[in-house]
Length: 234
Image (tube, rainbow, N blue to C red; front, side, top):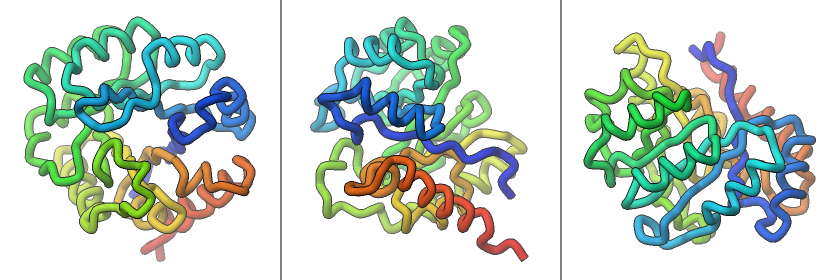
């Protein structure tokens, strides 16, 4: 059962990229305190929504927690840049990491939370030794960087993977958080929460649904979370 509060982390690349400060203020006013920031190098994934300087500028205008997801081939460079900016959590991909322990220690010794991210088809067995060392595991539920493909839906095993990870965490007696990213929609949130997701990266299918205000969408997301927490509760 869930003993942790569910965090809604709006994805900044789904906000108005021409009016980022205005978007962030709006997100703050809606009562959200975590911002999901994707750092994409254009090589690991064919997209590059935010530059390092943009994140630096964002840091100056808000006190929100920055939950950074690095999708890059050169993790060390981006980790260092994000540590310099002052973020609260950094997740990097295991698929592109050779020196995993080194990155974990680098982040940890700066007092920042550590997350490791997995692409949809990457098996959970890669977590065998790192799970106890990390605060969060970020599961990509669609292929990274293809969020612009409106027809792409979550992988069919999305919920199963969250459930399997949740069981693994419990079996090891850990309190690792499970973050889900990719088409985390009003339709899929109840199932993902029931399966064990703690941090929901919210984008165009939840918090940024067009033609609704942010606060209207937030209420819908919260209803979906409550629904998920109540599934199976007798």
